[in-house]
Length: 125
Image (cartoon, rainbow, N blue to C red; front, side):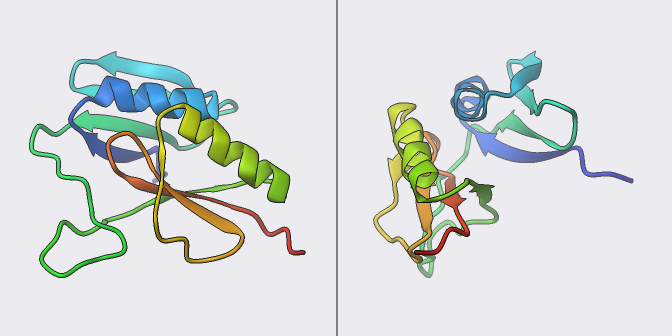
């Protein structure tokens, strides 16, 4: 058994796949109206996006009675400069920086559909 993908629900799977394709540089695999996949170079688990017409973006940090986050994606970058460059690239592709930032070497953002994701680095001053 092997993990082949992490699947994100979205009101527009193609648009969300395009965001992550631009961010990561991965190639599109399947491209159907209700299902789109991204594949990393060299193989391995990718990302998939499925249509969910009732999708509600999660609230983060959690708030009682609100849609809870079920998962988030973490992307490691190499150093503080790369962290800031990754944030700038994501924002240019229509991500939003989350108000709450829990750690110095982590930046929490929201993709265009509202899923939280993080860039992080081990680089310590």
